[in-house]
Image (cartoon, rainbow over all chains, first blue to last red; front, side):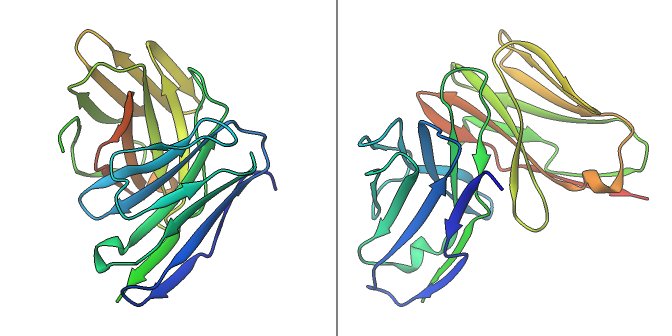
Length: 113
Length: 106
């Protein structure tokens, strides 16, 4: 089925470890986003991309890096995980422009111990 | 963070009731989103609007740009509507509310 696929779905990391979350979409969307969702905080934008080869910071970018080498993939990296990065991470994409809604991935639950 | 405020935080309704969820925002926006998050965690985009009103099935979303307010209405509510409804705005950055948890009782 067409959509946004996130891998992995669950992960437990030790403090200081690194990992990469992968987001893949097959809808030829230009815009892709990484959000984190924490209890009582709502969705917060980490980084986003408006096209292949572009990235930009969102509201909470510290501690994360991203890359968009291919249009269909948007990678979120944690170089040195911290317990404060325990969260549920959602990737989303859309065609961009006004009146266009998002398609969300199913989320990645990350726990940093 | 208070760019987007939703009310109520929690809502319980009987099946068949008309439901309204409110969203107020404090920044100038280019678009407003309504999302639905099911108990399993998946998020679905319901509406994206910048003026007026949109309708999809039993769901209606309205926005008043002058008053910086949007409402999401659900007509003839059903237990399958039980979910968290999230309002978000695009204002340079993207800001989302903390959601309204809706439970519809049979």
